[in-house]
Length: 129
Ligand SMILES: Nc1nc2c([nH]c(=O)n2[C@@H]2O[C@H](COP(=O)(O)OP(=O)(O)OP(=O)(O)O)[C@@H](O)[C@H]2O)c(=O)[nH]1
Ligand SMILES: [Mg+2]
Image 1 (cartoon, rainbow, N blue to C red):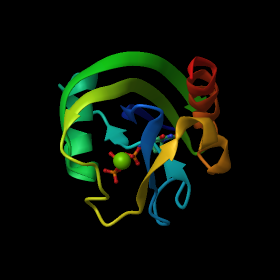
Image 2 (cartoon, protein in one colour):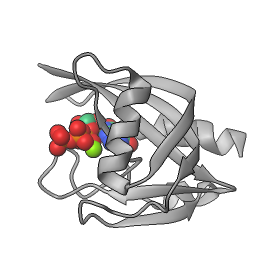
Image 3 (cartoon, helix red, strand yellow):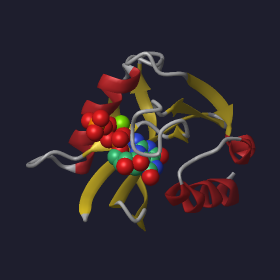
C-alpha cells in the first residue's frame, strides 16, 4: 500500500484558520483541508511545509510550532500527517493553484467536510480554543 509523510499547516490568525478545498480529482477530493503536501526525500517537515505553503497559498513561512502527528489508514493509502501551527508568516494566503480557500473561525470547523484523518486535529483545535 502507498505510504506517505505529509506536512500540514494550521495557518492561524487570532481565532481563525485558512482552509482550502481539495480538487475533485485528488485523493479525498472535494473535501476541505489544511494546506500542505508530501514531504520530499531529504526535506525536514518545516522545509516541506514552507515549500508547500508557498506553492499552494503563496505565503512565506517564518517559523512553525509542532502541533501533533496523526497516522491514518484510508485503505488505498496510509498517511502520516505532521501538523504544525503556522502563526508567523508574511503575505496574504489565497488559493494559488486555483483552488477555493477561506478564513474560517476555528470554532466553526465542524461545519466543513474534512478527510477522516482530520477529526483528531479539529478536536484538538476546538479543545484549545
Ligand atoms: N494537505 C493535506 N493533506 C491531507 C489532509 N488530511 C489528509 O488526510 N490529507 C492527505 O494527505 C495526503 C497528501 O496530501 P496532498 O494531496 O496535499 O499532497 P501534495 O500537495 O504533495 O499533492 P500532489 O500529490 O498533487 O503533489 C493526501 O492523501 C490527503 O488526502 C489535510 O488536512 N491537508
Ligand atoms: Mg497539497
